[in-house]
Image 1 (cartoon, rainbow, N blue to C red):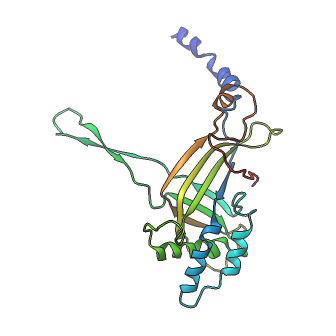
Image 2 (cartoon, rainbow, N blue to C red; image 1 turned 45 degrees about the horizontal axis):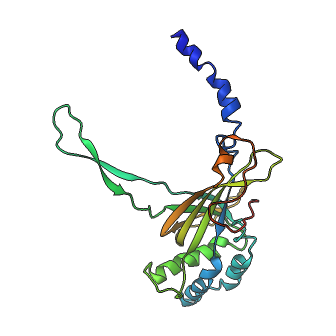
Image 3 (tube, helix red, strand yellow; image 1 turned 90 degrees about the vertical axis):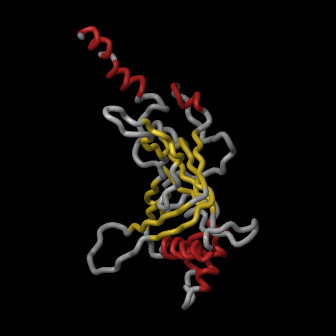
Length: 250
């Protein structure tokens, strides 16, 4: 037993000195991420048309244009997004066969689970010109109007891609770099949370939750895996395929 304890005595300094000090195995330093709406301009016409078809036309076009056309808000990272929930994955495995005496039934796979209806959830900061009410709310109604059915290329578009970048920092002297990128293809808004007006004083900004569905998603990790693993060289902001530059400041 004493020999076994001696064998593991060096693991604690190894953990701190050779594990946590390496870029690939270092622990994330807080919430560092950014969300990029790839093409809100492409769904603008469909949203405006939906607002015009509502009983008592919704007068949102000015606010919608202001929020969508400003690239600092959306194309360089959506500054209104305060939280994002990346969906998980599950493969269904159920026991199969006859339950008899002490024998345990084996598990049989029944395939990959469907994406949850609330798979991609985001929380947005509510500002004076509300991003949720002027963009997300009419987008939800647009999704309902166009019906989630296949449409020919070039027809009315209400779907676009959403990318979520996970950001890493090595030291206070180095700039942030991209660790991972999730891209959700063909995303559209399907739900927005309610809002209550009351006379209770508030000391914190109001946050609103929205839900998106999507066709499929991809995961990309920085291609320079040799640099990430076990050396102290800087990790470049690059992926296996060319990517558009993203402002990672939040």
